[in-house]
Image 1 (cartoon, rainbow, N blue to C red):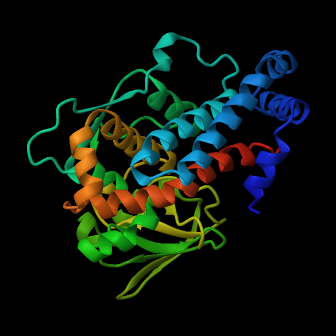
Image 2 (image 1 turned 135 degrees about the vertical axis):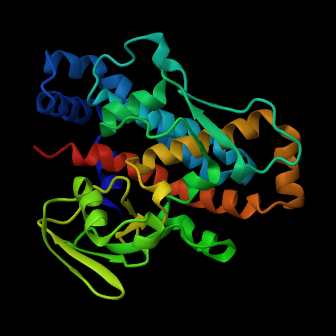
Length: 315
């Protein structure tokens, strides 16, 4: 059993949940930490329980129903995470919206990979991006292909159909990072400019060394909590880095999953004919990408959010 799974089991009582929330509030300098921990205890438990149930039911049901269950499971787990830092969430009704929109009427010859989602100024997405990850949305809109390409576990599918969008550069347990030299061409940067660009996203650099194949650097400590432009393969713990300059920006993988699951859930609810054809005929290249993403979202999406809860237990 993973440490996050054990932690989820541990939190499934009022006493342990209240104690954990109190710890989080003290850690985050929340006023009236004890009062707020008792007040939010039951809501926290229900968010966790509902999120867990949505994912459990999603894993048992047919593929075409999974996006709706996974998306709402994710929303509940995000709200549980928010309660650990924002005891008065939701502070306004504006925050109850999803914070993202998709094109209402799909065009003829619609392709999911080319579809875009647009970020709103208010709602859950910009709110949790700020308060969970201290990030502002790095774009106004983004295509599904560009979002899926940031997920390490999606790379095997991309490699079969097109060039990979991420390159393995290290592991979270090691302070050594190795970037392929060919990134300098795709980023249109010199070696010095490339190193300067990534300095803000890594611990202090101890030294660098370059040969014909790799740009190597040792940082003072391993990257234990990766965030864009670094992404982690969950099982191998390998770190990945964008191959293309336009994919280099600060975004957490939780944000990526939210945007993709939102759009898939909207398709499942409102684009009945296209969604039905996708699973009956499997005619489009979209199907293997959607199918593979849902397979990994079943376990990686809750794992990413449980990690956010687990790491807060530290003093």
